[in-house]
Image (cartoon, rainbow over all chains, first blue to last red; front, top):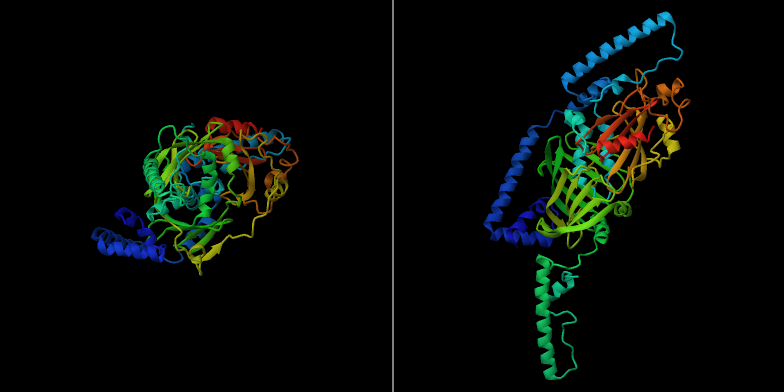
Length: 180
Length: 387
């Protein structure tokens, strides 16, 4: 067996995906080839180190439940991912706009009531051109292509996961990039 | 057309046997037999040389295999051949890219994808052919992702995309043919695929957006065919918490989905050329408002139209019709095609440079969101048909 072919099978060996004969052949090569044996040793040592390092980073039990509860308890518009400065600016703009609308409506009502009730759309969603489409929407769009011919499922999965789990993973400048 | 020596032929060569028509036949004279043997050896030698040349580079002028037939073969290869592979993927994100390594176990319609380091995967995806489940090892929770359950629409793909060979290469040590799929109705996305010569399995996929930018590239680092696979690989481990796993979703129609979402759905009167309605689904917005998802596809690109009513002031759409309907501004006044108000809001461009480009359109009684991998001008043209 060639060394590059052997080393390409390390993943399969690690995950016990090789047949008995393939495993025997590979083990036989490893006993005769110090380079491949060293590569496998190094890889296994890295795995152990990585596993230990990642285990130390596991958050305490119940942390996610607390975060989830906090997200659910907060009002929906606050869950939108946007730069802090944008939030501040938006709040200021919405405040001014609301005051202006109230002032105008109060003025009009003092003269005569409107003929039809004013039912503005939900401003928190409607008025911001920079508000990203919700993560749920993007994830639904991305995963909609899952069963298409030649869908790159590895990339789709990674992309959908990023959108599903973290709105802040969307770049803030996405609404300003040019079209094709 | 130069074809590679078949597996049987190669095995015969290894075993020292000469396959027909080169094997000498009995019932001839001694001199004739020697002549025959010499001729057959000469012919076999020439065939061997031609075969070797075929492995490295097909001679100029050789007829390539039928690309459309290979498209069909390649789309079924995933479910035909059990395999284990390690893949690496690069995904465009903003001005840079992110990358990830994943391990895939595939057996028929079932597959498992593990992202992150082999020692401690950060996320796992299980696909049973009908549902995709996300497993989060940190919280030991499982959630369902809506993917539909249709089979790949290969005929639609071939109707809207040109398949052509674009050379050859080697991926994960395996000789591959490179296939390019380009739109017949541009603008649209395109793909460059490295197909394993022996099995037609896709070993590398380069996905380009409608503006020609590389969106993602995923390639095999190693692949093992017919690996040892246990059923446990494709099961949710015991003790994990499954959340939001509904019963099988119903087959939605416009009428039933309209009723569920609380507004009469309009849909696209004139989808872009080559696109057709693929499926309908119920989803929800970030604030929990039920939203209809109408998905159109041309076989590779997809165009999603989301429609949802405005949320009720002070608390969601839990009871159904919402503000517009309740006050007679929605269904009562609406007519087909009248949903977009010029004054309420202009379409806004969202998500440019991502997996798709999106427009949000504020109608009188609803919000439309269009998402597709199309240039902004093309997407605005689709939005205009909503008026």
